[in-house]
Image (cartoon, rainbow, N blue to C red):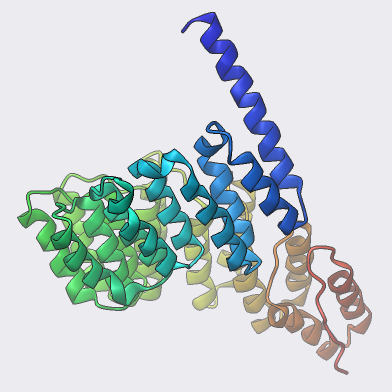
Length: 370
């Protein structure tokens, strides 16, 4: 790489970061939209995929769908819209904003813009459909669009259909699509298996989950932490906590780092078994690990601690949740307050109410019911 090229790249990176910081720090969403459209006139800005994703996420989270439409429709004036990758990005962004009709319109308009439609944009449409939770439309679009534009679906296409079918509970159909992958001369990948494992194990279909775990092994596809987490959930749902612990240890022995979901599965299993000591032990392991407790961890443990009347630990967990900025359901936190009042520990209950009401991230309306 020449010195001039390095200087240009360094300058471009610096400018991109400055623009990103400007948009990220802008709290007024209307001004952010104005700035985004202004910055879009730069071809270097239009290459910043992460900036587009973050901006659309912020607007969609605030339910400002008209402004999502405003910034994405504005992109159609630029020559990039004739490139399939750019059009696919707009399709994906509309999908993430749950605006599937707009996503499909971008796809439909591609031929009139002399923009090629290949499996890339086809997959973007399928993905947008799933992201917008229009699961019932995916199979129809898969069949109709692939035939209309004469595109050959790849494994990503099939994975998306499997995801949609699992989301709607059509597990037999998901299994048939899996078989279709092989018939088309394609090879199921880790995403294929993880989607199926999460679908089956997570919906009480343990036996089917085990079949696909075996198929994954037979196919020579190595499981990752998501695969193990799905099976951990399955084992726990079958009340096979000891086997889940063995699987957790197997995961670690293969140098796969467990995450918070791995620990949560084991913790949930011991809570379901009413084993307070093991639940505490695994929570301690989680805190000591590279992972960190999340909303699910605290909701599970606080509810369990209150159920077994260990209010000292419930109070400790309550405070730790706030220290870690975990936004819990108010009903979970109210369990601790009500439990303390029942135990005639009203002053401690008042202290928790004060903590909840003074939290700057979310103020909880906890009450003392004496």
